[in-house]
Length: 121
Image (cartoon, rainbow, N blue to C red; front, side):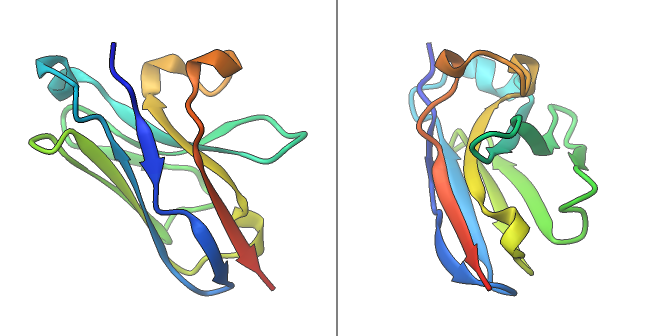
């Protein structure tokens, strides 16, 4: 059972950048065949996947973040990253990582603590 830990969130001004990290140092070889995604949630709204990176190296992005966010993975480090540029106030949310197979609608107990991203102005 792999524990995922998100980090890198913070408070930034609109137009700024953040780099989020999700690490799974205890993950075994299964990591290399696990597609991963970044998800976000605002209180009162449904969780949504904003970026995914798959085992064949392809990526996908929600329309709202396309062209501004870049997802990457480092299989040796057992980590995924989300580079966020041109941040907008509507990007404010708690960001989570999870395998894409878990799904954005999975129960809350399938998710970690996440990392808060707040974009001002």
